[in-house]
Amino acid sequence: MRFPNLGLRAGVRLLCAAAAVGVSLGFLAAPAAAAEEPTCLRGPNPNVYYKITNVATGKSLNVARKSRVSGAPIIQWAYAGGTNEQWRAICAANWQYKLVARHSGLVLDLAATDAVQNPYTGAPSQKWGISRVGQEGALATFQLYSQGAGTVIEAAAGGIAVESADSEDGNRHQLWTFEETGAV
Image (cartoon, rainbow, N blue to C red; front, top):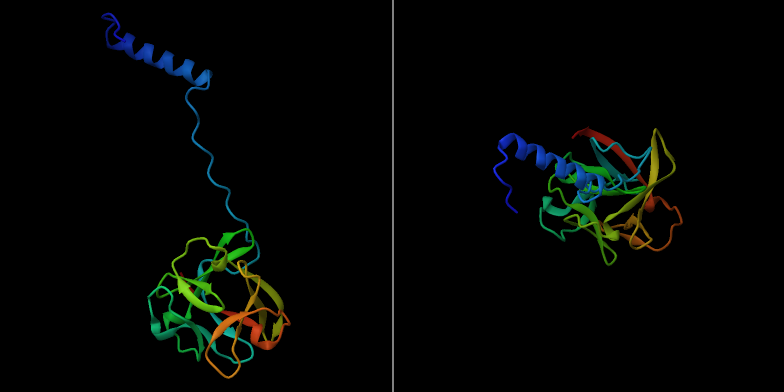
């Protein structure tokens, strides 16, 4: 549509008036509302890294061989201070966390019954409930519940494996402590 020679100011006024009419009639929609932020109150601090240690074995969650590869196994190993042994708990969904390995940026995941690291996709197997269940000395103890499998993870007795367990009997192999290792 062409307007007769109205001049620049008149043209701008006409465009502003047309925009105002469009807004009042709902033709120009407001931007979509941002997605609601998940709620994870009173959980781990997302601004620190943690050493996550099994109560029964005294060994910590560790990405085997400091691997940065998807699917690398998560094992339990004597803590040596490596970044492959440090984890960050970040709210992923209401009351669910993703546990991120410091060295790789990959998350704790379950592949069948084995604990591995993978890129975060939002899959239920990558979301963890962190439930306080008791006290071990000065440290609180927790169970880590897989939201996808409905199981907890436990440290295998007499081995290095970390795997899911159907039973939530609270035995010491299913209990973990979180100790801060440093700020993000």
